[in-house]
Length: 287
Image: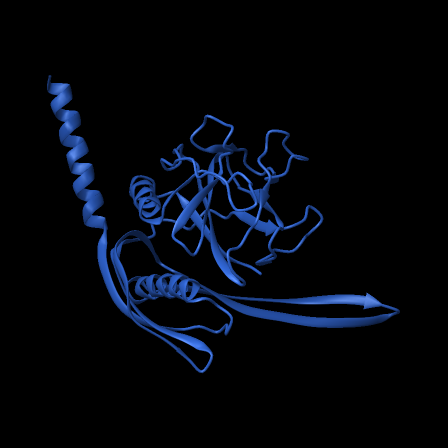
């Protein structure tokens, strides 16, 4: 009995410490789109993402790294020198849970969206650097550059490499608030996809895995914006609880799905439990 009481007290202390590590952040943010063709739903999604990022930077600050390199190439006895320089920034905190997000005002003016949003949520300081993941989207197995622009009917492939063994899930959110589970594959019974460290993977390709589910991107209207979430951790975790989604207008089977709110709850629960969990978000456009 003493052992049980001690374990319960230890767990309670751990939960209290974890709660104390979280900070409640609030921000009203003004967003202006830089793309005249972006839809209202996509502009709102971008506004919320930028607001959360700004709230993290305001509270925790940012890490800035200035990188530069000189590349020399020789051709016909002539040496061509090129100098590259850029600065990358990353907030020192991470967004854990969204408590509230809403649009305060929205106006389409001078061919651009001007949106004011309010976000409120829980965040914490990063205790370590994000795991360095190699992630790239493509519409062809021959493509070597990262792709953000796709067309209706394009294939979708994910190139992925992690520096350590771990577990992987991949989700896609559309402008209607639906979230689709792309990985693990629907025909598997595991809660996540296991990956080996330092191994290059190509997902959604039957050439690389005969049991893979091939994906075709579809849109409901021109210039549709979707967000791809790549979730990785060296610690085991299970995908969110989802359900069958049926077929689309082309009679193609859709991936399993859940609501955006349930997806955010799942993300929050897992990130609170696992500070090693790393999430990469990639915005794509389907024309």
